[in-house]
Length: 347
Image (cartoon, rainbow, N blue to C red; front, side):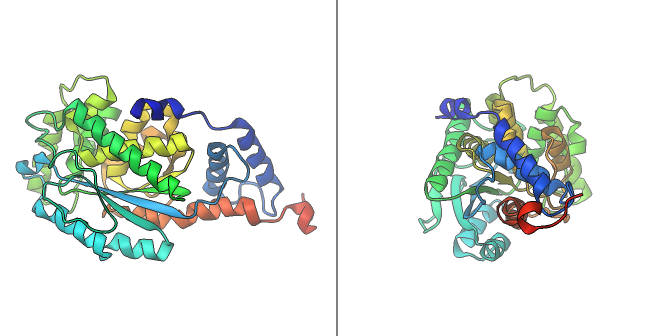
């Protein structure tokens, strides 16, 4: 499934890009006056292979949840049970991302790829558990290669199902206490950045805990001599990171835009990009997370975030907030009159 997905990812369509640029030049506005929205609309035309591209509605958010063995190293003050408790909160509709999703008309699906607890079946919750949490990445590889591939393919299948169900845009979400630690490790590994420069405060840790977290990330990354992106994911990633990477790859293969959330999503996007560089054509950076590693990852991927509000919640909140901006960028190509059709003089 992974190999077929990677093989299906193709370059953006040059003819559709040219048509979108030409249309932008004819619309009743100064060329370039919508800034990054024009660039985004043109790229989405290239992704869809048609101009104008489909309006990205309806949209579906997948929140991938997993626990982390590195929690044992004291990298966060939050108890591990919160992962399962927040999954129940998502399913009940009581989290911040649920409120944002209702505002934006986004369907929410929660996917258990590695929660340590046994979760009760519920509507809107998918059981795709690979194992009950990762191993401690500071002691041994977090996953085996086979486990990483299984998680990637779980993400691929979720993307397939959501698009088959009518989604015209996919949004990334995540939940996993301690998951900013593997995110920092992935970013340092894929971008070769200083681990200290990409390790942030997560849920709001104190300086002592932050120093311990930096030490854990540094020890995990220093001497990590693996070339295969799957082996990097297996060594220092999380099950939700691997599933998100598959989710992103499948969006690219299906030529559907995937709006990235914060630092967990962009660290997974680095893995997707390493596996299939052309997959970045489908990626839309929803926001710039307050986590320092997010800016490093976005710079490496050459993605410009649409929103910068100092968010660091995760869950998919930044992606959901950015969705109306993405839809507006595309709607311009569908609905704005040209100079000729509106009888407006062109310079």
